[in-house]
Amino acid sequence: MRIGQYFTAETPYGFYVIGGAALLLILIILLSIAFRPLPKKIADRIRKKDYMRVEDFLSSWKESKEDYPGCYVILIYDKKLVINPMHYDEIYVGQSVNVRKRLFSHCMGHGNGNVYYSLKSGCKVYVIIQKCSRRKLNRAEIDLIEYFNATKSLNMTRGGAPSR
Image (cartoon, rainbow, N blue to C red; front, side, top):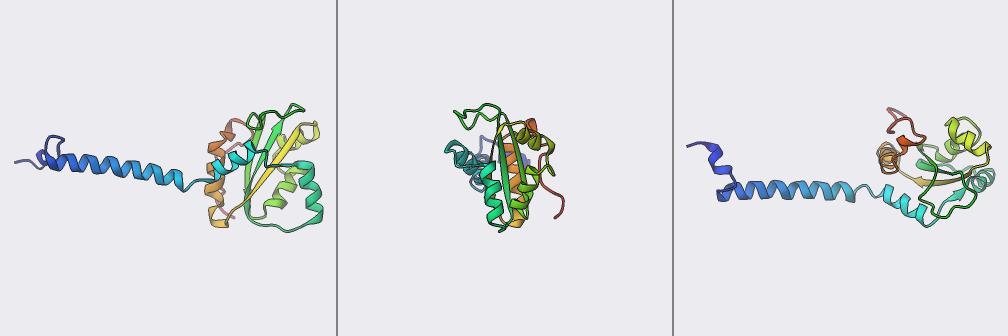
């Protein structure tokens, strides 16, 4: 008698093994979606236009130097009127343990050169800052870049810094 004959779809044991494996796979997929809510949260904020004009960020920068770890999304629109906020022309996603300082450096030309060029050429630029724990920064950035397909835009890598 072979062991394999007990684990085929025709035997009751095989049915349970195959069914259990399928259930486990579904559970893993659902859990991976449930524990990565940040990209959907950011997308909802974009749809609701819950973002800040870069000019407003710069003026608030002067007022408050408070900083914290987090991820940021920079949305760039070539058009003067933004009708559908999800139809941005360019997007850049980043992370930092001092997220406001890092975003400020992009605005001053010490970050992604394309972002700075867009600012200087008169494009409408908006930012979203999302606080995040230091240990979740890499995963959050990777998920955001993947969700927004940002490597097809201004991000050169898939994200996740090797060290801090």
